[in-house]
Image (cartoon, rainbow, N blue to C red; front, side):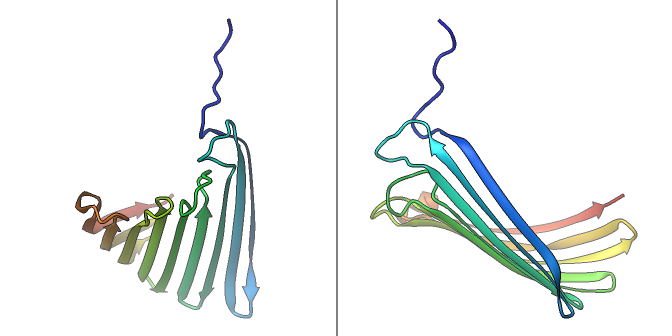
Length: 172
């Protein structure tokens, strides 16, 4: 008797993740750079799975009232076939003056669907603003526009959305 096995095809174990981060100044510019790497071992070998590996790189720079940031991520999703990676990136810029702030962010996420099947893609753009009412209280608002594309041009897998948001951040 005893517990049953828990190793199934596609399961990953023995996960190792490492990250590094550096922040400092270059002249009058505050700079932050980060990176991470992760790996896992597949528990049961199959023709379509493999050990999983992923990495992320990021950078942020701020000078005076302007901040810029970017991030890139790649994940092979533990698959062995071609065109199955997931890649995502985001780039943003923000301007803040006194209690007012505004920003623009663009993001993209692509997931390969396998050899000869194309890539599913999600794209988004956000424009937003903020106003600090007082210590610990900030009002935010903006608009996001999303576009989802299916790799096989399946109309059910295609979608667009526009999101308006308004909120309050409280910090103590």
